[in-house]
Length: 553
Image 1 (spheres, rainbow, N blue to C red):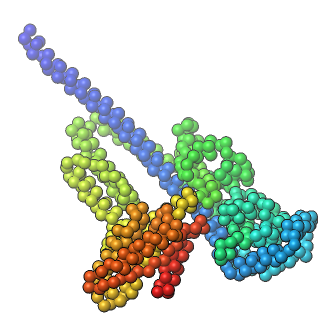
Image 2 (image 1 turned 60 degrees about the vertical axis):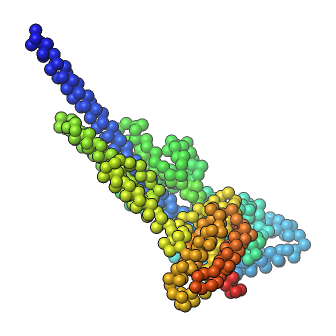
Image 3 (image 1 turned 90 degrees about the vertical axis):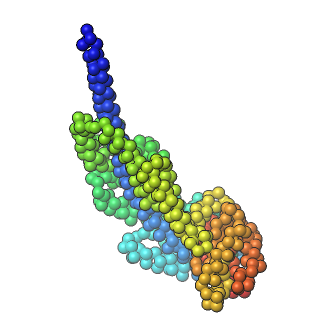
């Protein structure tokens, strides 16, 4: 009896060990499955992000190619030569007793002219000096690209009447056309791809408003841009893809087919296709591989063109895209099964305890290495890993500061400017808000360095930066953009507001007594953002104003 009683605790401990062992094996099994599954998802996501990045690059290249073609004529229409001709054409029309009657009559004659017939009036417009100049420009770029990139180019005056053209257009009067009205109102017009009967090409139409030097409307230029080279670029993109059987589909924003390597008809409606209806963002990765069994699952990477709203889809077969991933998953599964019998409880938990923060720290380090300096370091353990995380956090803060701040003056630097100014321009343009910039330069700063030495020059730079910051709002940005040159970005300020700020800073600097020197003065150049401005054009106008200020003393 005593022997039996003594054996009971031993049996209970055995059961506990067995239950504990199976519990641990179960936990390890579940954990292994989840780990493999999450790894599969993470790697799949990484592959998806990679192919999306490639799609984005292709779309950007398409945009860049088209904008390059537009810029050829954007520079042309602001020339004095073009402006003078359009101004004279407008003056000639203004002298007419009945301008609209003249335009209507010529438009009727134009439309009634059969086929390719060229009337004397048409010939005058096609063969005038400006038309010859446009044709030479078109021929030059067509020869340079070894391809007819421009189907048709013509200019109208402010009344909508043709003034110069590379060939016969379908009509003479253009101010009743949507593209002409949109360009006049908004400054530009971009149309989705269509067949242009005048130019006999598949093209996209671009129209640009032309203003004179005073900013008054004087005409419109329309460029019919042949997009065949876009198709050729897409064909080459398919041919050079690292993945087999990749197919490319380029659609308009509303789902009309522009180009398809799978042979869809031009302008076929694809808007009801599942991949199109699933493309809800600017970029993305659509995975249909889980919904279809076998080897026929498909995945789509997509990206939208910022210029035209076109959507580029890259279609992949899941088995081709995830071959290496599936092979890796099989190996991981076999390894996990083998590890069940060899797992050590202590080793497992120690490995988990250590690996989690290390993995997190590695991901953080990768993010920081990729330039994501805003990455949050949320590791707070009280061991060496926690200390390493703290050091990494301090290093990140220092990197962030150094990457965006001028060491001497503590003003922002050009790297910060490259991020702030385009963002503020886009915000001002999108929300129709005021935005101004002010460039100021220290007068005779070279003399300060030559007479008092560079250490005194450094002192002057720091003091002036401090004075400027003390007289600015928190919403303004101060940048050091050159040796003695600074720039202030002033959101929500028109030219008067920016001038008031500039004058306040100028006076504050002028009355400040610089130790060992006395008085220092600065000169300002100010420019207010216009809808047509780019970063460069806004900067150039402010710089020109600064140069004028210095010239005026």
